[in-house]
Length: 68
Image (cartoon, rainbow, N blue to C red; front, side):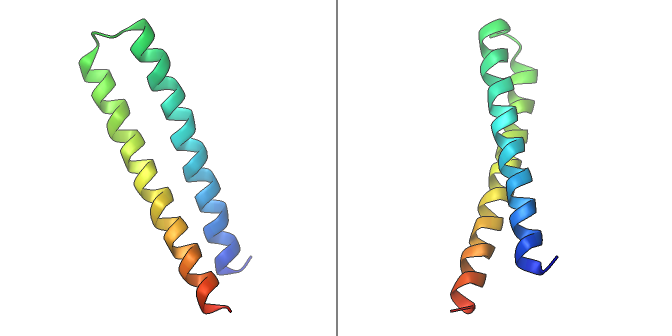
C-alpha cells in the first residue's frame, strides 16, 4: 500500500467515524436534550474527526497536484 492509498483509507475511516458520531449526536439530542455534558463530549469528538478528515483531504489534494 503506497502513501496515497494509506491516506485514502485513513480519510474513509475518519469520514465514517464523523458520520457515525453525527448520527449518535442527533439521536442523543432527541432522547436526552438536557444531557449537556454528553452532548458537548460528542460534539468535541465530531470536531476532532472532522478536523482529521479535512487534513487528510488536504493532503490528498496536495499529493494529487504533485503527481500531475
